[in-house]
Length: 339
Image 1 (cartoon, rainbow, N blue to C red):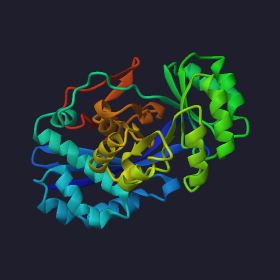
Image 2: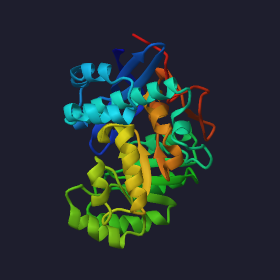
Image 3: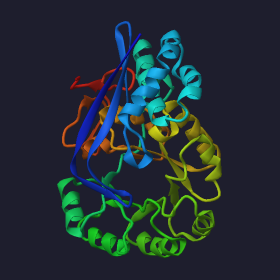
């Protein structure tokens, strides 16, 4: 058994701005987990907003290297349980390791993960393409650069409805709106009524996660469905979101990998909530892992690799308004630029 680490500073096509800040690069960690002839790849982006660094992720994974080596024959879910007590303070590291183990597991069993899980690729959702906060002119330019049937519009300004009205003049595509917790309950309810008429499908995390009273008010009175993001981090959050949101957006890095994400999807479905999985500007390594979950999802945000100037991996790709799976086992990911 061997674990190798590769770090990359992924350059974005455009400056990416949300209500939390702006960036032109995204640092990411690739974990390569090898046993015999097979190597599994995992990824987690080092997200500054969550205080995550590649150095800390590497140190965390190295701390469980002996556990991994002694239990490499187990299923990914079993290894996750063994390593979680040691990695629970660094879910991003746990995620990268868990994805690598799942990829390795699929390759050892000579099947793509979705097939191992008994799933098929009929009727899978298409990803949205994200348009970050910018001047209206720049946002229109990004839409024209990448014609797509479904856009996620990042908002959180004092002119949000007007921005959507202006964008609507340039495309008939469906919009999803993500305010990243920047709105009040009153704003959200008012905006929902106006945005519904502008072909907006749903609102993602309009309020600060701490504003439960506001979310309860929004849940009762919004003209559009409300999807949790920052309010749904780990498994126990799904049930907590039931009375405040119509659905949840699950991030593999925040919940600690494919293993807990699958359990969260099952829990959300039991509660009759819509299920979305989102990305954190990963390369195709991380996106290929998300893609294995597509048959279980109502919505997906897996455009991370589409936002990059150049990718570091091959695998599941999104183009021509479709998701294309490679003829490879595991997640289908293959690293192109080893360092």
